[in-house]
Image (cartoon, rainbow, N blue to C red; front, side):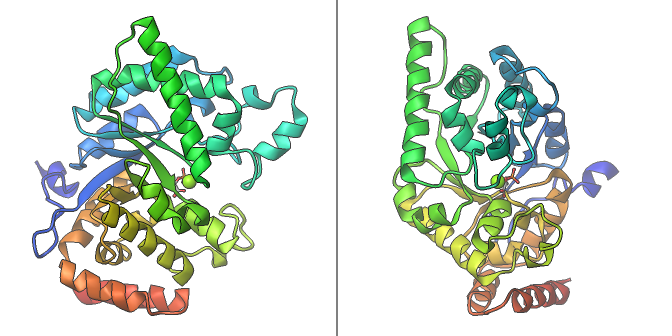
Length: 330
Ligand code: PEP
Ligand code: MG
């Protein structure tokens, strides 16, 4: 009982004026679902499946994917599970992918190169193996699928087409799967953010990846330490893009969440609610503090905070304003 209180398991994430915000958890391994469930999460908002590749030197086969997805769905106990297709590349390049192809190895290590959905679209057997497993697992729970690093509409359409091909294959084989799996995308490139209205007409949901969105908007490599002071959530250009993505999703009436690190920072929670966000997915140990941040604010206050922040010109001003707001609330 004490443990449940400490983890905010039974605390509802509602604003002071009773608006429910959905708080989900981010995971990399099936064993982490438990850390979300025990804190009363509303499901898994981001399952980073590339970690299946990083545990071993051998390429995971369909059964390995399937076992992992079934384990996550079982632990999630019927709650929604948003599974992201492989986000390989940069620092996550399995040896099996580049063995014997040195020129490919160089490109897959670049943040602007062959990574993520681009890599999946160029390695169709790898991509289809994962999609087959996802479809097969779909009968065991509330599976939703999203594609990472989409930067053009054509890219999303191609991925969706391959998904349809895989469905057809399974159909022919007489394998059971759900036909109505929601297909969403990460919005984490400036190009996708700028075309959010167009994307919102074609995709079932958005999940905003602030970690990459900050990197690509500010042209600051998220892994480079010498420029890390330029890498900031409070940058007005980044915030305007996020506001635009949320507004586009709300106007098109599709779900939108933030699954990047920004949503795990209690200072930013009121701002995101004020922009219209009603769903976040955060690192499991942050679930309690994010619920607490939601409960400290009303939607009206959050909207005033967002209006003010969107008028500020520097990251420094944004950060100090949000910090002061939190101090006044506590
Ligand atoms: C992001 O980019 O914000 C994100 C959630 O994905 P990752 O950190 O895995 O790139
Ligand atoms: Mg990302």
